[in-house]
Length: 627
Image (cartoon, rainbow, N blue to C red; front, side, top):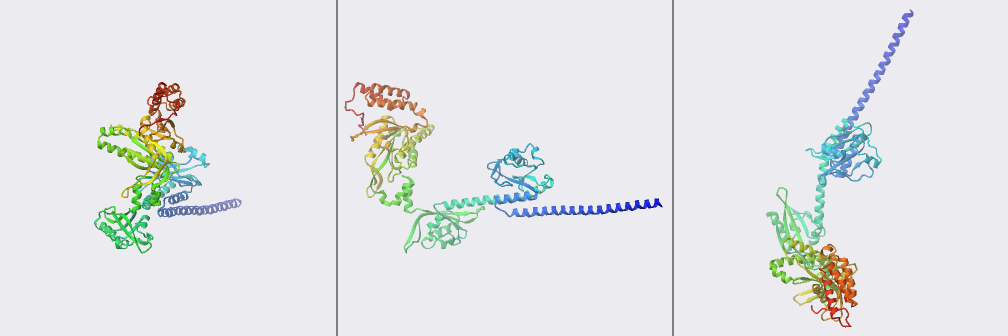
């Protein structure tokens, strides 16, 4: 009996264990089923989210917002910490990004297209999935060190178009839990395929908008009026200049209006011309025509215009409209255009504002520049008429550019000579400086001009320039049938004398003491003489400007600084009648630069005065007996 009871207890205990195991098994199966359902729900939710964000980004056409949406979607779908999308710039061959999700102060990043992990993926097209960043030699730890960020895992894939063309790289950092797996790679690949389409569309849209904005800016910046009409002659576009020239209150009220409404009455010729171009497809133009509109009063106002029309064609060559260009050629504009050939635009504008009174006679201080070509007669005989005219046209173009760049006015051409004025009809406050800078730049420009001529086997030319500052009479001078704005007076004559004196002293530029007194900036000058010009009793000191030698001092003026020191010593001795001391100084300077004609001239004078001293009342002045 005892044995039976013992066996019964064992059976009951076994049954209890089995029941307990069954309960545990049933609970485990329920938990497994719950986990499986939960996983399926998660996967389904992530797929739904992937579809949702793919649809969302496909609707975005702005590139920068699209980049941010893509990054936000990637970090969400892959449960990552940070993400960066690099796009390829085929102009610079760089990968760039200005959206780096997870960085507070993201700035534009540019790297070579084949550099680092991103570059390697872009070039090879292979996916890189790094489980431990610091254990991979390709990872640059310096970035983490600089930012204080710790990179653990990296998933990097190429972004390419449907045609297989790579357009960028997407790089995802630090999965929230664990490492990026094959499922993450598939999801990222699927997502980037959708994102690539959106990126292509956004880039195309941005290019189109850039071109559109550029064209709009160009259109509005045009001084000429421009309007476009469609194939039916209805206005589609116009710029501000057209609105002003056609005296419209606004462009908007004329959009969609036909040709008869745009150009009626006396302006019907313009509508007929545009319609002719629409019908025939060939450009047409009308020069010096009139656009008439009602003025503020009852009287009609007209504008002189050049009117030209061009057909507009589609990519297939089909006519889609016409473009009309309206150029204002009223008398003021024609006068300004003519005046701009002789003087700076600012002076022309002020003259037009002042009317005829601004061109009346007035006495004012100006600086006059005279320039003349050396041995021009001999040159013209050797070169012949065609080469002479061609050379003069090229030469005048270069010289006048230098004059007008420094606010000078071209007064006139006198054969091969140029006369320019600084300070008339309006002073700049630095007229003497502007004149001297023009002269210096003219000599330097002439050097380049001669180098080009010699390379072409042509004769070089040399010039001399004289500058003087003084009071002159300026204004319109001439007959009733022809007037000429110019300046006259002793100040003009002295500038011409100085230009002529450059031949005697072997100088490029000679400047009067009056111009030197008006200079505000520093220049390299040396006093070469005190002249008493023919017909005048008061002597004038003149200076040689040597700043033009600064570019190639040894080539054009060897030992320049030492020569100038010795010359100054020689001049001091010369004025004190110390002929032998002066002669030695001038001889030393001439030894250093045998081409210094001024030193040679004074050496000859010293030798002359040693044999035949000047009178006791000699004041050191040299009398110029020729003009």
